[in-house]
Image (cartoon, rainbow, N blue to C red; front, side, top):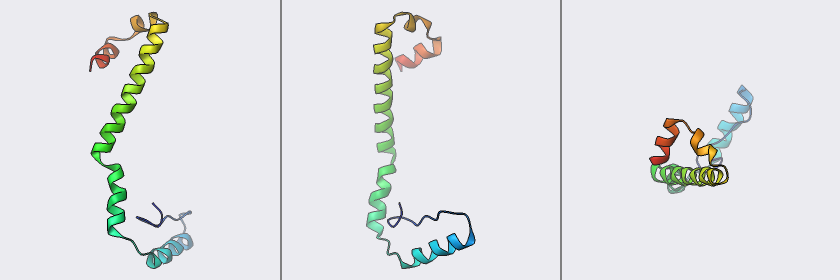
Length: 85
């Protein structure tokens, strides 16, 4: 995150990198803020958000199958197994 945990540069050129380095040298990074921001990308959050997305997709699929029962019959065996998991 610019200014919080790093410095971005727009172009892959020497002048752009030099400008980013100068901004980096003038920026004061706060370790506790960096750590707090990094927790947004932890395993627990990833797993929780993945479960939410899977649940949402399963709800959408079951709604579709309720509307069109042929959709459930057309699923491949691997799809049926993943629905159980």
